[in-house]
Image (cartoon, rainbow, N blue to C red; front, side, top):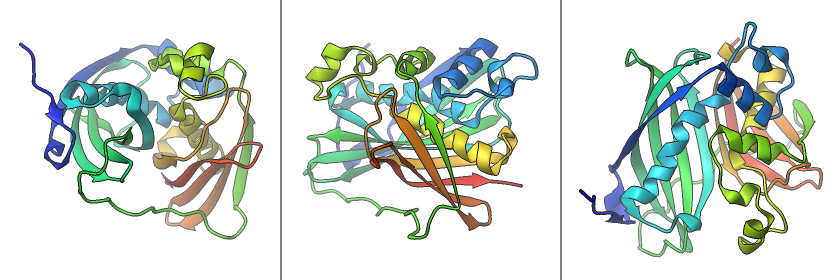
Length: 279
């Protein structure tokens, strides 16, 4: 039985996307950590292994892929524009997680449309482990006269960052990260990348997201995963494998950390970002 796909527009709000199940082992947790540049033993060694909180985006990733199955859009025209997660309970090092997702917004951006997807991931007992909010920009899908959506939040302060962390990615960083699930050839195939308009393969946005999360984890949480409650970002630029990412952080009080990431050329690649931490 074939499910009829909906035309992208306000009527898509409320659409439930196909649920997905994610089974994983300690190996997957360690591979993800290596994929986002982690070097600390608690994240890459099975003895006393801990899960980096940004791992929350991995089980939820199929929800983004499910959008094209339920809505009439060309997957090639989709760009990952925004991402955020919030932890409800400590992520286990092994398990079976189920994610349900719903389209919560469709905004007319003129040359394209921004689609927001909220997902909830539960464990085998049915308890929520974490939630995600994803924003995908669909090129060429705007102009339908809908709401433009909320304005940008979490702008970086004018003052110098309170803390910053510089981290250089590997030339094979995208090759490692893709093994955690996103095998889009854009991130490894030079010919495909050129067809997409890039000189060479680019780093996954969610890999850069992981670098930002690790920076907050190191600078404000003493690398204790239970202290990083959430992180929300907007993707604003491209990172290439081998680039150096500098994550700048501003402490706004009450556990809120404004975050911005730049490459070695000063290009802002993550903006309008905020993390929530606890002491």
